[in-house]
Amino acid sequence: MIRAWLDLAPGGIFAVLIVLYFGMPLLLAVFTFCRPFKPYFQSLSGVVAPFFSGIAMLFALLTGFLANDVAVRGRQAYNAVHAEAGELRNVHTLSVASASDMRAIRAALKAYVNSVVNEEWPAMDEMKTSPATGAAYDSLLREVSVPSIAKDSGQAVHAALLNATVRAGTARNDRLSLASDHTNDLKWLAVIALGLLTQVGIALAHLDKPRAFLASLAVFASAAVVALGLIALQEYPFDGTFQVSSDPIKALQSLSD
Image 1 (tube, one colour):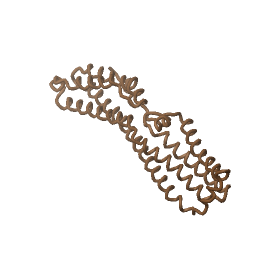
Image 2 (cartoon, rainbow, N blue to C red; image 1 turned 30 degrees about the horizontal axis):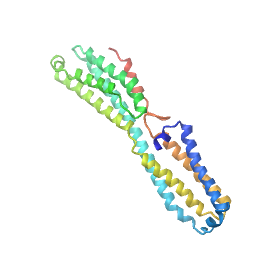
Image 3 (cartoon, rainbow, N blue to C red; image 1 turned 30 degrees about the vertical axis):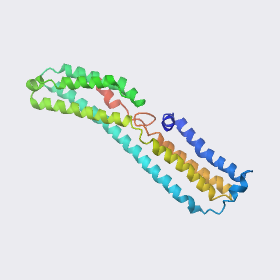
Image 4 (cartoon, rainbow, N blue to C red; image 1 turned 60 degrees about the horizontal axis):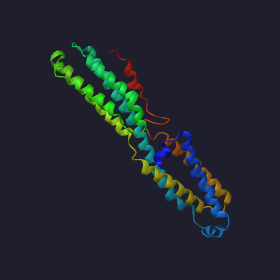
């Protein structure tokens, strides 16, 4: 349910939040000021304003933790993509600068880059991996691991090639793990539920003042929609409005053979 909501377009994400957080005040107003519910709910009057501050504090804290998790994941995804692109460029540069012929390595490198851009990146939008890209990376690693490279170009060059290729693979694994991470789903449920409960608390503190009742709930609903909507737009680092771009890896497609 949460994942289906987060996969919506920005307009859909905000629309769901608007329905939830502006629908709740209307529902509470019906129960509080309309018969046959009015006598029972009006009997609850007398709850002081500090009553709901504990719920509001829990909502604020958990929202802050969630926003921090989303921001950290976005930075990690950005760093992983740029680290992978940088290490792949190092492999290409070393293969060109080497005295021996390394066209096979550059061909394997280009095949891997094309597979990442054309196959793996679209698959990440669906939280999947591309077996073809994994095979392309294995092929690149095999080409770099050929023992004759150390003999023809020197042990230092061979070690640098191997290290750069392995680091590129590590960055790829980081990228894939971040793309498939959905551990925040339960946090989203808790944050949304606490937001609705905070509205109930606000309503209990204004049972005898209909205009203050609606005004305070409308202000809170507006703040919740803006905050949660903007956080939700950044939940998946490789999908949505603020996604991490594949341009650093895509730029490697123009490297020479």
